[in-house]
Each structure stands twice: as C-alpha cells, then as structure tokens.
Length: 143
Image (cartoon, rainbow, N blue to C red; front, top):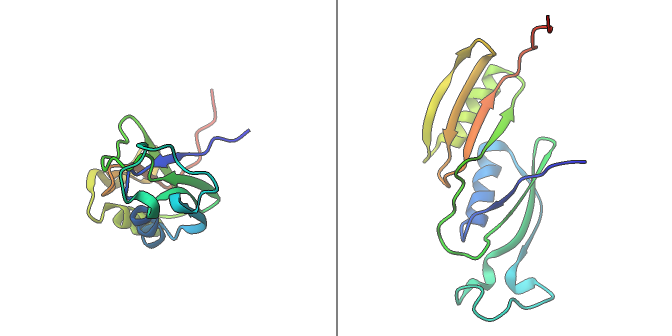
C-alpha cells in the first residue's frame, strides 16, 4: 500500500511543475491537458478557455511520485492543514531545497538545528503549499 499526494493548483499547475523542476529537481513523468482528454468535460465544469490547463500531471521528487492538476481552474489553490515533508541527505541539500522552495514564498521557521535534526525548517511556497525540509537523524532507542 502507498499514499501519494495529489495537489490541485486551480489553474497554476504547469507553473508549479516548472517551479518544482527548478527548486527540487523534479522529473516530469507525464502531463495531460483538458483538451487532450478522450472524454469531454461536462458543460460548465471548467471556465471557458481552460483547454490548455492541466487535467493530470505526475512528477517525481526523489523517489516519490506527486500527482497534480489544475482542478476546476478556480484560480484559488488551497493547501490548508497539510504540508509535505522533504527528507534530504545533508545540510547543504537542505539549504538548497529550502531556499528554492522559499523563492516567492514565506518562511515559517528558518532552517536550524533542532534536538531531532541537524537541519530543519518550514516554508510555504509561492503556491501556498507547506513544506518541511529535514535532515533525518537516527532516533534514540526506546527505553
């Protein structure tokens, strides 16, 4: 069993995918536009001119596949109550990924040493999606 995030960017999906390619080195697996669908969307479901918007995209960040869409193209993506955690190998990678995600976004907790990680920080990217960047450290044994 596997859980995969499916993100709805409400009209900014292609921009978001390009951003994650630049910021995180994401690799696009596939992308389909509404106009390429073998079945038409019911009338009134999407705003006029949405044919070039993304119906479905899949991209990899490391070994994780993230799926995304423009959804109903409302122009108002909402990612409240959820963040994605990005586990990285070392502090240099944490700095690079965090700074990439922070471009145009909002730092919620700067990268810093914590009791549970040599490097941890929280950022909301320019699309409003929350990220936690962490260099994992071994957990102490249970007593």
